[in-house]
Length: 382
Image (cartoon, rainbow, N blue to C red; front, side):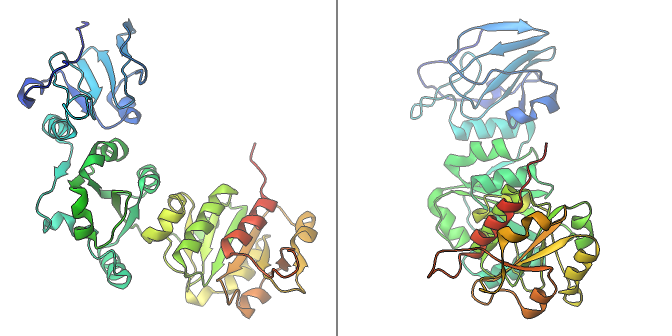
């Protein structure tokens, strides 16, 4: 069952017909191997040796982009930039296996995996990615289509692992293989020249990757609060970078749910997801309706959750003074930069607390203050 494997040192013409056979099955990434009944793969080191264990061929290659095993149905592999068969050409520029263009074409023809090399910038399939420079236009378009956009590799990875259905990805051509290794099979990856990204999106960004996902029905406060011990509550936070940082801190310090008042901006806006490093997609959140704000804070207290309102006011209680008297369930309430919390929200809290600081410094960024409070409350599980 074992065939020889190797790589040709000199480039020559690539013909997909030579390699698309019933014995070859391609999957998107090592994480998908189990879905194809693969057992194991060695993904690093030089091509050193091969052994057969339980019907699986273990092979070591000089790149982590490739996995190959032998199963009863023949060779199966993950292919990005390195082809795994004697006679497959090497790319004359990169020195790797077949070029990303050839690899992409092979993937598409062998399994119908949707890598789309786009040359026409008016292609309607790119419509999800237009008007990114115009926030108001973009917001209306996303609401109309029930979608949201993420930017950057960490955000795309978080999106792929999240419950949000990924609709597509748009990448500079040189990043196509990496994008395909992240998203699930069946998700189209549109690849265009890097110089054309700004023409399509209206913005210049160096990351070279965008993704669009479907926006599901919003969760209710009751749904995200069920079983929650630690909650972050936001009032009037309209700065996307602050919002993203707040979600990143929430994830770091074990927050189970985030509640948004009616005026807080959209956490799924791409700048917020980018600054959060994708954690917006990992922490459950819900928006409180106008009729339930700020009375929901009283509801939290009635359910046994202490509500701490952060404020720079000098007459507030130092944060450290209340920590020992708090119950197991705590909500941290913060407001926007500048105006802070409304009087109504402040009045609905159990404690008005401030973070002690050196003289002459009255406050810190809202995300920083939330991080300090959440870190003080953090109790690692297990």
